[in-house]
Image 1 (cartoon, helix red, strand yellow):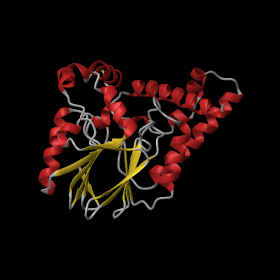
Image 2: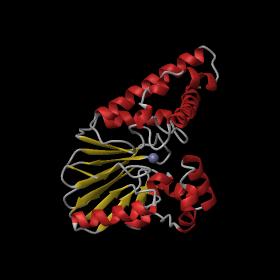
Image 3: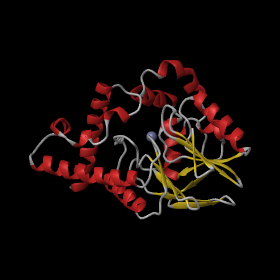
Image 4: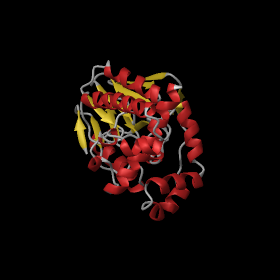
Length: 283
Ligand SMILES: [Zn+2]
């Protein structure tokens, strides 16, 4: 765990997404929650002990399993976009949930199957469409809907400390394109680029500065350029994924918990989804 700006606790080491906890005069505000139950409990205990404060809210940056599954360990006061609320309803179907986890982390499923049967995907306390500002006494937490990585992705900005929680619109690795809207994602990055930022807490990977957003912005430009070039050469999506140089934009060893050959084929799959998204929006 690391502490940034004295009152923000961040853990990047759990399996799944990054999780953060903001200590405010009106209680703890969490950003996303751990995926595995033992991590959920550990994170709840640790943050309360460390701050001496009680939980107020947990904000979900999107509705994907790796960001929301541990919400009930933190607080039932879940805040998310209205579309994320619908996504949570979808995950409440446990067969669907197990299938998604089987696809992402096949080795995890057998051990946690009975947990997944029991886990409570808490219905949100507050949902919003465009934006929401949480006044927490000594902290102003600005939530803004941006979309991009998913139809429900938001960004969160802690005004006093100039810290951006980007959700999965910025990561330390090649992004997941399964539910992406390419144009919205690019717009989201432009919105981040005009913010005054000291720290970026990405959806996955190490904490960094504004250069993380700049890198993602450059990645999107390169990707779009490359797909356009491939399109004019008449390549299929499979051929594009095989010939792409952009698949190597992020170092493979920084992609979480997959071995190298698995990772490369995972990245190629994401590339095909990305290329599809680019082409769809070009029509
Ligand atoms: Zn994620």
